[in-house]
Length: 460
Picture (cartoon, rainbow, N blue to C red):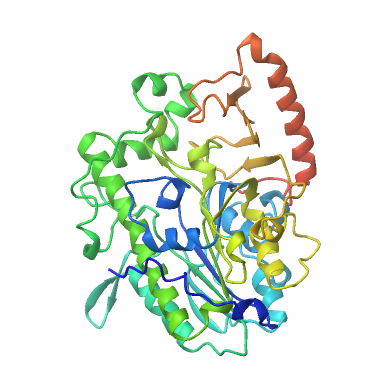
């Protein structure tokens, strides 16, 4: 295993004086919730390389997705737009040529960046003849890949591909490399009795001697407090095969953790290669996830719903041009997946297209104190008979959830300051009626601001 603790401390000030645009490396994990990194307070998980990036960079403690499902969220990351604007609600629809040209990839390509993409494209089929370095695959892919008759773990293979790209990088031509991991997504096609989170066998030794504690928000009483449509939802169906029983829970969560640790090994390899080639001083590294994941909370699995474990993801940004005083920051502002595209363009001194709805995080990365959003709108309208469509509003303190098609209307209200695990639904309590009404007004206003849906009906 590659461990590179302390590899960032020796960066000189030369990067701050370079005049050409920085290189960008965008690392995107799949289904990784925010609290599965050491830098986010998880004392059990082994992520030394990402944690080193965090110590010499900026950590966004409140990073969220505006839709918690792979394809729509990835389209939002690419375009900087809410799903209701870009219109990609399913797994088959592709970005149009115009949308791709206005994505962060398209704008950087037009500005002269060498564009590389590795891994899960995630938005229909990957675009043909667009990338300078193309190692994309459609769909979910498989965790084990046969190369010359020998099985290799996909995460490790993607690491090899990233190093291949970096070895060909030129010092006078800026590049943007996006590495889109399958990890830590469950292997959807697994059979009962098989490992749902197939990890690299080289990491088997990790977590063997520990016991993963059960989530705070777990137990029969909490599950029984859910409405029937959630008790019989896809989230519950998947919990039954992934987390039911003490042994299954331990095996699944440890497998999930090992997948995250496998990504961390690749991060270490990338940084070592950047250093060896003299590229580290002018390369910004962004690490985040496409959505969160229930690890048994409320007796559920999967994502989709607007609860914290489903919509909250990590965001670590390492910019070698920062001064020592600007590093090792933890920012509390609300950051969103739609902010990533305008941020990457901002870091490259490029103007985001007007169609992008996200905000440029660059001032926050630099440690500036500026006016910032205090709330955001969430939407999930992917059609599935056991996934209820939802919309929500999240402020610094309050969470309002609206199941938009239930009859009668079902709502949830949480005071996140007093109840961060969201175990006490306050929506029907008389004392919280004024707050509920306030959140309904916010929901209507933010929903309107997010824009009209790009399609009149969501694909069925």
